[in-house]
Amino acid sequence: MIKDGAVGILPTDSYPALVCDLESRTAVQLLYELKGASASKKLSILCRNFSDISTYTLGFPVSSAPGQPNFFQHCKTNFTGPIYPHLTSEQISA
Image (cartoon, rainbow, N blue to C red; front, side, top):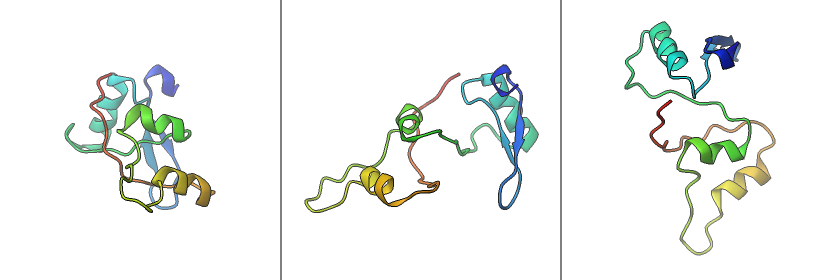
């Protein structure tokens, strides 16, 4: 149903999360309406894997300083569970 433009609800450890298909303009507009939020409000996205991150964001910051760890490699190696980095997004137009 999500792929057909529906908005769903996911349980979380705090408040239920409203979810929709990021690539469905109608679903995203409906999500904003249900949240009572302005379309300029930033939203979180849920990615299946690290590959999806580069599809929707400008990617992990790259360290140019010698001896600084690669942030992406550090996360992949040291975190077994979900991570919640705040990354800069590209302009998405569905």
